[in-house]
Structures are given as C-alpha cells and as structure tokens.
Image 1 (cartoon, rainbow, N blue to C red):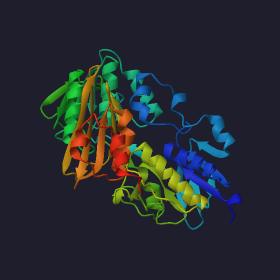
Image 2 (image 1 turned 60 degrees about the horizontal axis):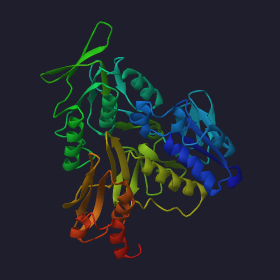
Image 3 (image 1 turned 90 degrees about the vertical axis):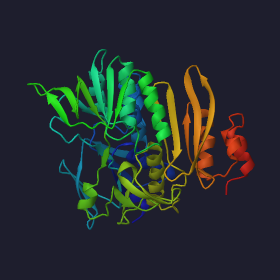
Image 4 (image 1 turned 120 degrees about the vertical axis):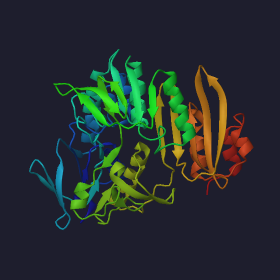
Length: 419
C-alpha cells in the first residue's frame, strides 16, 4: 500500500503520542494520522502539573504541546474522549468504546500509565488525591490552602514536588516514605539526603521508613488521619505518589509481549512488526545504556516518538543514542540529572559557592573511570556539557572534573570530536 493512502493510528494523546504524530508530519509522511486519547484535552505536558500548574502559575493553555489549530494544519485527526477496547491484529483494526473502529497500516501504542493506588480501605476517599492529569491537578490545587494539614504518601519526585508546592501555598506538610530514604528508586543516597535536608529546612516534616497502615475516616467518608504504625497524623488532604503502573492490558490482550511494559526493540517495534510502542508504557532496548529499561521521562518519550515516526515513515531508523535525563524543581533547587547511577564505583563533586542562599553543585558518577551519570543542582548552564560527557562515557582527570574553575566545555574540547 502506498504511503499516500496508508493510515497510522496512535493510541494515547499524551506527549509521546502527540509528538509521534507531529514527527511523522515533519518527516513528510503523507498518509492519514489518527491520534486518539481518553482524556478530553489536546496533548499536553505533564511535568508542570506538580509544580507551576499546581501552584497556579501556569494555566491549561500553557501546558499544550501545540494549540488546536496546529493539529488541524498538520492534518492530524485528533479524537478525544475515546478509549481503545481491543486490537485485532489479523484484521489490523482497533475498536473503541464509542462503537467506532479504525483500520491501520501502522499502530503506535502511546498508552502511558496510571497511578498506583494506596491498597488500603479509604485509599479512594474524597480527600485522597492522586496526580496524573489536569483534572487531578485542578482538584488538588483547589484543596491546598493556608493552614491545611497535608500528608504526602511517597517520597519520590512527584511527592516531593507536591510537598514543596503545598508548603508555598501555606499548608503544613508531612511526607511519609516507606523506604529507608527518599528517592530510593531513582537517586543515590547523597542526593536523597540533600533533598531531605532541603525539605526540612523549608518546614516539611519528612519521615522515612514509615509505611501507611490505615486511614481513619469520619462519617462522611473523609480521611481525618493517616495511621503509620504507632503514629497518627491528622490530615485534611492526603496526596498519594507511590508510582506508576504501565497500561499494558490492551497490548497483552492482543498477544503482544509484555514485561514491565510493552516489550519493544531499540526501534520501538513490538513483537508485531506493524505495531510500535513509545513512552511510559514501553519497555525498550536502550543502546546507550546497554540494557532494557522502561523510562518515565519526557525526554525519553520525545526521543522514542522520533524513532517510531522514522520507522513508520520507512526511513532507516536510528535508535535512541542519548543517555536518559530528568529534571525536578523543589523550593530553590533545580535538579537536572543525566544517566543512571546504578553500578558506579566513584563519585566526584564539583561545588560552587552558594548563590543567594541556594546550593550550587554538580556530582559526577564514574564506573571504571568513565562518567556514566551526572547530577546538577542550580547549574543549568553546564548541564548540556555534562550530558555530553555522560553520552560519550568520557574519561577525564578527576581533579579537573572536581574543579569548578575548569569549564566542562574545556574538558569536552580536550577529548576531541565525538566519534
């Protein structure tokens, strides 16, 4: 079938799905593109939901990846408020909950994930909040107010960002983390200690090694206290941030390989050559890391979208070659992180004088002398160079790496051109 009359259906109208559709058009794909999502909003960015949007500094329009007319100009058929219910791989069709069905030549699964719910009675009480979409953030924003007692369950990035925003709103905040430290799944102990200290300095009661065992409710079903072992914490608002469950049921029912996400190769291809998967729902081969991984990361979703688009367009695809990176804003600390720190055997710190009371430093994680990960706190101007050092697995003089007077660009220049 020629490209001019081919159809690509993208399930999931979040950032990964939206960017896949846009990337196809940028490559010159002339076929039909249908972008279908269960939310009523056009594709939007989720990271501000726990920060600028939650605090009221950003509105819905500012979250959009593109305004409405951009999708029309790109001739992308955006269908909102519909959910795919079944994939017929033999017939190459997708059925939806509104009774419609679509035929496809290529199908891209950008199904994302859903929040993990607190598995105890009261976990869905009216004043228990989860944060995944605009509706969630709008509800929570309305609940945060001066004097409110907020208990955040989960000390990952989402929980900590919500805690910081709630403090700025005047709420009294407690963070409960069941693991022995904050950020246990995503950051090293030294970085976790930094953020624990930062939150405590700003008035957050951070408690680690404390798991929630019960939620006390009143006659109306509202949670009035969080019980954690022998501790009882009065609460007006409970925010739960304990992880994401990838949406794989549709793929599994269709007989695709699933293991902690929809299994894809380095080119986003599933076990069916006509079906690809991108974003939070995809467990993909990552050449830059040398292993399989499922990444909940906007930059990763964007890179995978470009790879998937190139496959659909029929180009010679290039796998994601850059190390994954992430960011988080909490109080006066802007964190940027590239690479994964697991397996490092040395850490080098590059510290600068605090700027207007804010910590400024970078940490580099090495394995057998090569830089495999880097963390930047309030040092955005050097982060791009840090990303390149990690991407090249650079071996540099540790003394000069630690010396803030030696620009990272200088160290890169001395390495010569990238291979």
